[in-house]
Image (cartoon, rainbow, N blue to C red; front, side, top):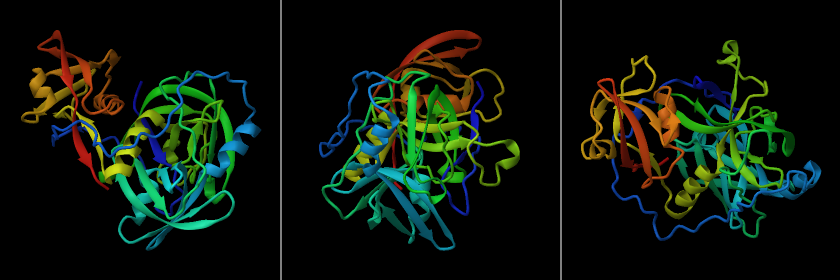
Length: 355
C-alpha cells in the first residue's frame, strides 16, 4: 500500500498540506529511555466491549462535556480546532497543528460544551506525532475515558466529536475502515508520521484534535487528517470518507510525558535513508554513531524490509512503523544485505521533541 497523502484538518486560513519527506529516522540519540518518575499514568480501559452496549446518543451525551473547541488567533491567522480533557485539573490533548500557530505569541481560547471559555497555554508539543497538550486554569473538569487502540478491529463502530468549521459539539459516526495506515501530514519542519486508524466517520476542517471513540465511548484515536483529491491539496476540502486518527496508545504516552516534563520522546533507530531508493523497503545511507542500528550490526547499504513482521514498502512506512513503538522497546528488523536476507534485534533509542 502506498503512503497516503493527506491534509491536516484544522480550519485555519493557512492550512497544512501533506508532504512525502521523512527519510531521517533519528540523527540525535538520547540513551535514557526510562520515563521520568514524575509521570502520572492517564487511566486507560482495555476490556473488549459489546458493540451494541450503548447507543450513539448515549455516548454523545456522556462524552460531549469532555470535548472542547479551540479558537486560534495568531497574527493574521485565525481558525478553530478541537481537543478533549485528559485530566480534571485542566489538561487538554489536541493536535500540534492546532496549537502551533499560537506557539510564538498567539492566543488559544478553549470553549467548553456548556459555553464557558478559558484562555489556554501550551504545555508542550510533539511535531513528530502531531500532538500537543494545553492547560487551562480550571479544576473539577469532566475527563474523557481512554480506550485501547490495540484492541480495535476493522468494521467496528466509531464516533467522532469535534468542531468542524467551528460548529461546536458536532457528532458523526462510521466504522474503522483500516488499521496501521501509513500517513504523512503537515509540511516543512512540522511533518508528522502517523500509524493511523482510518475511518469513514465524517471528519472535516476543525475536527483536528478531537476524539475518535469506540462503541463504549472510549477514546481510541485523536482525529488528525483527511485524504483530499489531488486537485484540492492547496485548498480546504471536506470529508470524502477517508479520515485518519492517531492511535490513543501512542498519544497517551506523549501526553503523559508532556504533562510531567513539558517535552516528550520520539523513538528512533539512528539511520538516514536513501531518498532516491525506488525498490521495495528502505535503504540505509548513513548511520548515527553509537545509535541503535549501528549497535545491532546494521550497515550502510542494507535495505530494511520488515519491522516486527510488518512489511516495509518504503521509507515512510518504516518511520510510521517505528513510531508505533516506545523508546526502549526491542524490535526485530529484517534486512537484505547484498541480496541475502538477515534478521537483527535492536533497542529503539529516543530523541527529545520540544515544541
